[in-house]
Length: 357
Image (tube, rainbow, N blue to C red; front, side, top):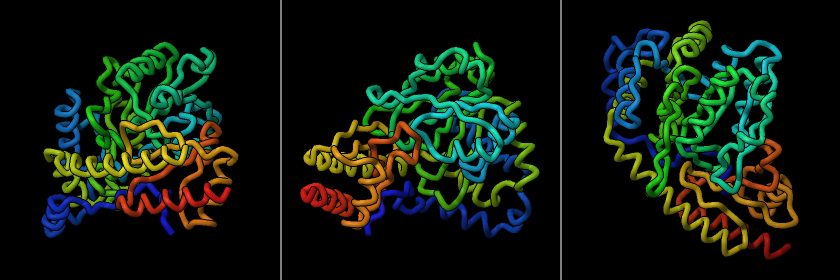
């Protein structure tokens, strides 16, 4: 079996981060409970990262909160913000956790269609004004999972303008913010003037620093939203193990060389996979970020039908696009988190299947 369905880096965590964890884990003072909001060192490192990367100034005491990975932060924010029957606008296609968290909070979903012809940026103009007036929260995710879509700062400017006009808040999921290719540099929501008035941004060290199992992330931005999330979290968890937070601070304060080296490998894999898929007649819009390939299913297949036949006949697992929403039908997602030879072997098997059809 070759599992291309899971979005988890196949590289080890960089050595300097592991060394920091070991050093801090040997300090008995780090074996106590963390402050609910996370340790000062990690929150200051997040603020420094935003200043250096985006030119955004953050108060580490009021505008930064430590998370046990961004996934739990997003789910808990939805619980903190929503009352039963409140409505959230979610990307379509989008990360399934969004809808699961909305369901658990008793909320309802409205769908924000993504434009396949424009790096899967939102089609804001297709949404009637009354839908914007009915929502309490809009979720954005760039660079995007599953489509690998990216956006420019103007996308966030439009979202902030709509939020102020229609009195809703924004949560931008930036888990893949550092995973970009060539000259593309992902913007931050908080680079928009007035974004802190209406929004927060979630970040994660999982993908960029190969720290998925470490479970460390953050949320930054609007103080009231962060306070609401902190209230939920202080009654459900006690933040992350202090040595992990301090190792995370070391990562954020680094020169990001390890991130750039990983991205170069992902980009090489991407180019080989796209070339092979193109030779098979499978259409792909080359992404500028993430480590996913969002490809159109071959003619005559549904998303689920193709994925199931590929798994049963060739042992290659891909994720059917329809699990990410109705607009995902007609696509499948490949994760590039395998060595090049395994990826090309998977594509070779895929080609053999299509030759039989």
